[in-house]
Length: 342
Image (cartoon, rainbow, N blue to C red):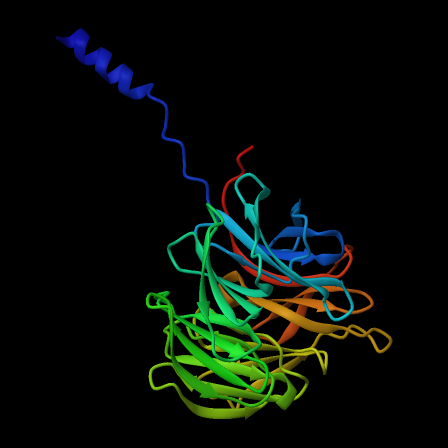
């Protein structure tokens, strides 16, 4: 009996320790449309992780919440004005670090913004011609269409529960509210001309929409679909992002070379951070994303010397700059990275 007990004890003491679950890596992804590549970099210090050829120039990109998938949209290009028009999506398997599938949207042209439905591998994509939303499976590439009434639905945001899509229409300026399950437009909000960049608060209560041509930002009550407040935001307000806590909103202003940081509790409080490194250097901040739990804002800066820039949200100061070497940098998204398959 003593021997048996000792054997059991020895067996337990020599059992291999359980393999720890890999910690997800916080990353940023951006595209260089000139060489049809998507790049992954560390969200902490912007150091490179991987460059993935995808066979198309991605104009917008998005991560699935589980870090398994990334989708990039080919809006058009590489010529001036994003010509010629394109109609493809690139689906990247992040665990394998390679292109999983290219989706040809056939008669649909100029796919643009992308948002994954929370907790799924399905993404909602805006299409400009004809005006549509497309729901696509990252795993299979199969998709369905939702017709939209207004044209130039360029950017979108999803409610936190994934049941509602809000689509900004650039010209003449409006917001469509789309029920995902019924595939129906349930409301429309009139907005200033150039309604494009938008984001919804983490609690789903407010939607901020930037109208670039009008230099205005509209704050919309997500429940009543009414505009609660309108703010001046000079400099061609372009893209909008909420901090995870909901206490700040970042808006890129390529016309002035600045990022505007708004206090959501008092939107009249705004800090404008210049990303221009020197007088001869022109930088146009476009896509942006909060990182490090909302303590920093990552910004893609286009121009003669394109860069990735980190801004401290608390101090409203640029803390890091990293040059981009690939041709025609575009798009930026934050997410987590699934462990590499090899």
